[in-house]
Image (cartoon, rainbow, N blue to C red; front, side, top):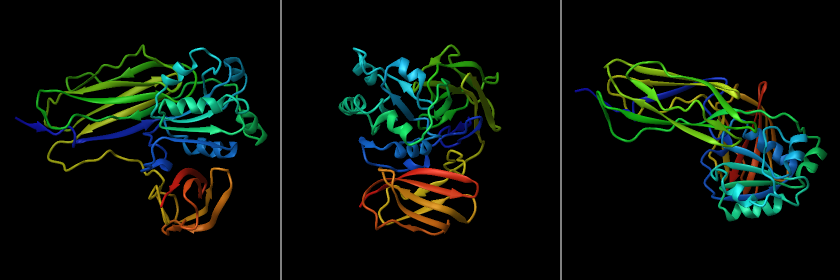
Length: 335
């Protein structure tokens, strides 16, 4: 009887409008728990840019719905501070995500931050001065409402092996990264005995909501097994391709795209750079949580380490210009 090790033989490749997301290269190995901080609007803009590809990032506007509809940050969701069940609404939000919180000028976001802290949210940033400060910094708002489909996790399988003719399960989690209702239009899993899914095509997701579905694998042959799940929605499309290779393979990891990253993170004295285009970085800037540029290097060699030992402990945004691309990430300095 042929034994398949489903855990170690599984590789994933994500294609389509949205590619497999990591929690932004800024958040790699960040270990400090439960962060709550008030930061200026310009730093909030950097935070948004740093988490553009992060499905676990939410912009939370606590003004009234009518005010929010007329003028808001792109992709933000709304919870009305004046609702009698406001605390209950907050408590229903996923607590593991990163939240950028704001109101009109700060009068409502401050108490909201206190509530979210008491409810044990993992990471919340409050915008000092609210949307008034955002506009004063000449930053853009919008009236557009739109959903955005993103992949949160390709999950994993139970440990052990899968026997020929038996089944194992892979859980995949999706999210609506924006603020209009996400509706699925089609989900395609190729017919056959090897793969099936319990995807609910009628499922609808509000902003920040997640949806987890299962893919069931039942090996029927000795050759390579693969399946591509095509998901289409009013907030974009994505495809998840699952490949199982025959033979004995030692720890085949998740296939990763060449994501730009800075490391170590947290750092103490030096940081290094990986997967940036070209050998020379046109600009490397470190910006503190007050929006001040505290260190800048031009024409920096990507293979070199950058000395950050003269900077105090804290959270910084790192802006890197490489060729025609600009990256913004988050760095924690801890000693």
